[in-house]
Length: 409
View 1 (tube, rainbow, N blue to C red):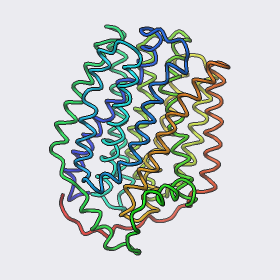
View 2 (spheres, rainbow, N blue to C red):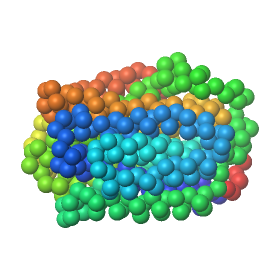
View 3 (cartoon, helix red, strand yellow):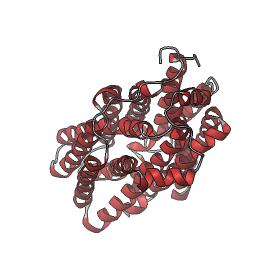
């Protein structure tokens, strides 16, 4: 990291812009569907999250393979080109279908751009500092999510739900694309790391990698199901909780604070949680983080005041910070360097598939049984995921030392 700090810092900054693009929607989009487009069904309102999650999940699946063939840098640039139209479509959308289309583009943007910032940082840092560099990457992304969520909430409170909050998105897309032009490709670092690896590179096969990460390798399966449930939680937080808080009498400014507090705590603490997992192991952070998430989600349904909800989303952010960078590092620990990009892509496919399940599942339960029952159901699923993770993930062990030759990017 010392020799390559300039490129790592540039990628950290770029991921801040990537995260800001998601943050545009965190506090106001569900309310936009209800207030401006007149959508009463909670399942229909959160359909934009399902579209986003499905597009991002499928893109993640192929992003690693594409980056091995086309270079990381080209895939990163393609991601930003797909993201540029998003705020413009949201500003001018004449119907909810256009909003769904914008979120399809946003999912493609996130799947390509965020995946590449992850892979490029892991290429540069090597296994010895992988948890730390992933913490940096995810911290930048989710602090930016929080900042954009707060700012759009404040702007919407002052000027309305459209178009002013989305002007911020135009600046984010232009800035991210401009910084990406300065990035150098990092694929050669994979070959350097592989030189000292104990086994030769496996023949490339997305089918085999998909099977390994999904069910055949217990440790990879344990991480994948935990990632899926983590983003199922996030689908609830993004799509259902703003509507829940609005139904309980909170204004847009207060909802913006709650929508920002969760990713802010999540983002900042990842600076320490990813680094700590390099020394104490991955499993304690993942299992403990999932249990904290379950408690925090249940708290949202139990308590009934702004200050109590703020405490609950802060606890949720702590739990997510423990889980999020550690899961990607776990996947990376278990696979050959030449399979890392594809394996992380499969993991991210399942993780972001959780957006679809969380949004549609929680929306359907809310329509049938009410907000509280949907929230309790997600809390129970999260606790069950912690039990599965405890049974499948490896115990504490030293993280493999880097075999890379230090070369400046």
